[in-house]
Length: 522
Image (cartoon, rainbow, N blue to C red):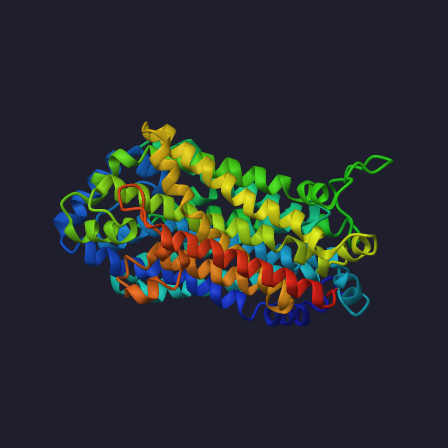
C-alpha cells in the first residue's frame, strides 16, 4: 500500500470538518489586509501626507519594531507596511491550528487509529493536514492579490504570496512539533513559541536598523515576508527562502512520521510521582492551565512595555491629519491624543485578553470531550466544583494578565500607575462577559461551544478595524467593549461597567446550571 493512500479522503474530511473555520480565517486575514487600502487612502489621500507618514514612521524605532520599516510611500507600499506583518502572523496562527488539529489532535483523541485501520498510508494524515493548511493560505493569497490588484498587480501578487507563504512556513513547523510532542496542546505551544520567537527577532532587527537590513530580521520568516518588499521594487528571490523552508520542514516532518507509531512522540513525557499530589479539582485545573497563564502573562507584560514606549510617538502617527485624529478619538474616546492612544491600547489589550479567557473557560469542555472528565466525576466530585477550578483561572487569569499589561504600560510610559492601570482593568467586565458566554455555550449547548471563539474574534475585528472603516456606532456597539468608558481622561461611567459585570455573572450561572442538568459528551 502506498504511503499516501487515502490522502484524498482524509483531505476531504478535514475540509468538511473545517468548512466554517477555514473560510472565516481566510476572509478575516485577507479582508484585514485588503481593507487597509481604503482606510489608508481616506487617512492619507495625498502624496505629501503619505510621504510625511513614511518619514515619521521610519524615524520611530518603536513603530518599526511593531510594523516594520516603510520601504515606500505609495498607497500599496503603506498597506504592505501597516498590514503585511499582521497578515502574515494571522496566516501563521491559522495554519498551525489547522495542522495540529488534523494530526496530533486526531491521534490524541484516538480517531486517527480508527481511520488508519482502513486503507490509509502512513503519510496520508500529515499530507491531508498540510493540504488543508495550503487551502487556507492559497485563499488568503488570492484575496490579497485580487483585492489589491488596483494598486499594482505585481505588488499585490508579491504581498499575497509573502503572507500565504509565511503561513505555510508555520504550517510545516507545526507538522514538525506534532511529531515531537505527545499532546496537541504541547504541539500548538511549541509552534506558537517558534512564531513568537520569529516575531521578536523581526521586531528587534527592525527596531535597530531603519532599512530593516538586520541579521535578526533575516533570521525570521516574518522578516522574509517583509523583505519581499511588495509594491516597492519586489524582491521575488526572497520567496525562494520561504519555499525552501517549507520544503525542508516538510521533508523533516515526513521523515519523523515514518519513524514512529500512531500516538507516540519523540519527546518523552516525564512520568509523574508514584503517589498523586493533587488533592483538589482546583489544583488539577491549575496544573493543567499554569503554563498557558504564564505564557500569556509574559506576553502581556512585554506588550505593555512595548506599547508604553510608543505613547510619546503617537503624535507622529497622526501629525496634522484630522481624519487620523478622528479615528483615534473614536477608538479612544478622548480629544487629548495621548489619552486616546492609551485608551486604544487598553481596549486592544482587553479584546486580546478575551481570547485567553475564552480558551481557559473552554478547557473543561476539552477535558469532557476527550473523556478525561468522566473518571474524575465518577468520584464524589460535583460538576460545578470541577468546573469552578477552571473558571477561577479563566476569570482571575484575565484580571492578572490585564494588570500586567497596565503595569508594563505605566513603567514604559513613565507615568503614575493608577490611571493607566485603571484604563486597562476597566476592560475586565467586557472580557468576563465573553467568558460567561463561553461558559453558557459549553454548559447548555456543548456542540456550539466553539462559537464562543467566533464571538470573541468578531469583537476583536470590530474593535481593531471597525473605527478605521467608519462603521456605524450601532455596529460597533455589538461588542461589549464598545460600552465601556474610554479611560484615561474620559468620564468614568460606571453603569455599563456594573451592567456587564452582572451580565457576566448571569451567563456563567446559567452555563453552570445547564452543565448540572445535561449528560456528559464524549
